[in-house]
Image 1 (spheres, rainbow, N blue to C red):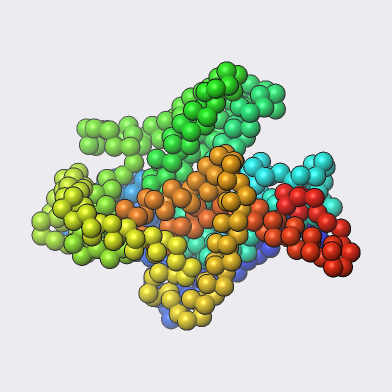
Image 2: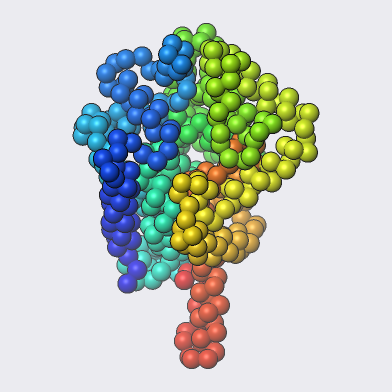
Length: 445
């Protein structure tokens, strides 16, 4: 029987098992490693600085400080875990298992907002009656997605970013509905939704700065779409303004701190230059390889000069080698949409085959669901928007299927719609052959 509670229990159980398995794998043979990726060392160190009151900085090459190497969103989470449980990585992974389960619930809420069941009964009643509605299917896909289980077990910023991102998308969907049907929420409730969504968006940007351009883009689309509707445009403009103010409120302590250190406005981190040159340099392959930071002309620079120099180099390379830049973009596109893991240390024939078995049908469902909602701008912006946004971003920067996974979570709503279309057609065939009742619509299946 379909049940949201059952889906969430399965989601939590699988994530707890994954957390234990990854922790055992990382620490096998008495290894002192924290996790599988080097970024974890930076996050862990910055969390220590928060707990001990030391300067929030990473010192490289003995005496060169980096004050804005990483934004504080994920280090704050790790600092809280360290304060509560000590420096035990398993405890962090288990807390992240809970966050992953919350993400599953938020996928359900987002899908219910954007693709509610077509039945006249409410979604909760449909779920309680054992029907696999579109929102429940989306949550179930999120619950058992093997790559999402794996990512929630890694000590990386995705663990905090994904639930924040999906919460923001849900809030945006509610606000979009309010502009379409102004009577659904009172003004003060809509303001609270905008405030909470904006605060979550600010926190999400502090966890994953690369998401910062998506938020204003969707807000602008929302407001522009409503320009022809006087009542809806006022509602949209008011909601967008409150949303932006909440983002600024959450991020302002980081902005003030950076202004004091650097004497100028630094919105997120001074890392874009390194990331950009990582994707656009004479030796670039599409994968991340920061060995250029060891060059004599790069490593002695302070972080502002290093960021500016690497940005300059990347732009010069792209301008002088447009053909190579385009071919790298194609390579990065392939890495982004890879059904299997890109990292050499994590690949094996079994993992490759398993990834193809899981992801290729899912890609088909995403395409089918996207086609079904081809005229629904709201669904495309909020279900598929993050997935396509990160795709475009990582055709410029270094790419990996790892960067696809956060965007794949909300897009599971489209996959659930695609599943509903297939289920409807299958039931229609069975009704002809075996007398089963024909379903009225994919959205109700």
